[in-house]
Image 1 (cartoon, one colour):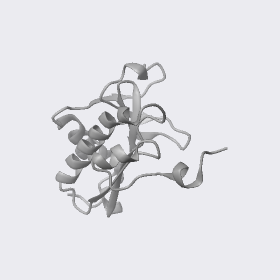
Image 2 (cartoon, one colour):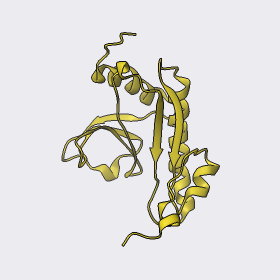
Image 3 (tube, rainbow, N blue to C red):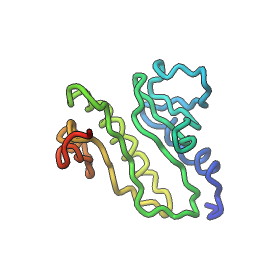
Length: 153
């Protein structure tokens, strides 16, 4: 491994390979404005626009955004990597379970990959309405701000 590996090399050589080689592989697609996100199912949309600039990957399942992945140069030496999803914001918390299962699969795949200098530590899933299910599916970090502070005004 080259310690000067660039961010795009990390994506191409490490993350792309993991996404497409999972038992239920992800389809890699470059973002373009005419892309119909509602039809994306197990798609990793590359260079997805956000308010803070493009995300390296936006993961979509059944037309819904599951989460984002940001690649970092290997030489950055990430110690504790976070995999995160929130699942659907409203509705029956049980509806978030499939999203949590997929996120857990991604977490385990990256953890098992043995990337040098990377320790897959945090699996952050769920919020106030779905944290119990997130914990059942393996989350070791949840976001429960509404439960603590009340609804946003």
